[in-house]
Length: 217
Image (cartoon, rainbow, N blue to C red; front, side):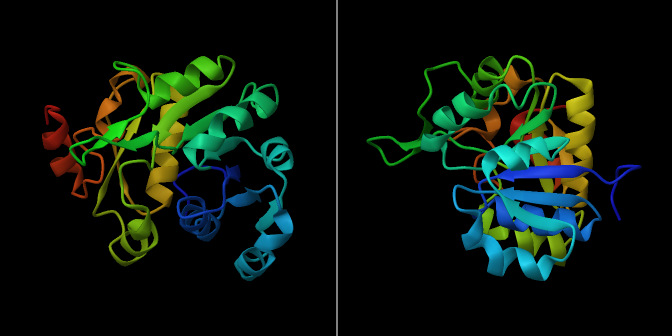
């Protein structure tokens, strides 16, 4: 059952290790999901068993068909994709689940963005006419399906947005994916879920996430 009063139409740009399990969760919750791909035909065997509320399309078609769009392409492909789709994303809620991940000489995960810039803020700068939120980025992607089904609403999921409507919609979709949303603040306060951040790769309850992120309560 969806946490939204009305089922949403969702476009997922990047049907990989993040997009596929989340799309399955959202179809099960009653939403309609369009999986965007450079080659929609290769998704037929995945999409067809999901039923009438799921389909594959091009990236542009997925955006046009949707109220909310999830960005889950590999980060190196994101810049060019946003260049092509910026105008189509105007007025839409965009949830950025990408990670600018790098590895330091010491073997630690680090963000490839310049110091002080969060991925969420970077995306918001690129999409000034969209409502941007950050979610589904710190949680190991191989656990998104199993933890969201076998232990529904036990594990926390960090989110960030300074836009009240985007925050509400993202929190609802986190819930519909089987997790408990933990709001970290605005996009400029979302470094904890970026590579190298306090929550990156961290799996815990909502209370555990808040404690690790240094949030009260």
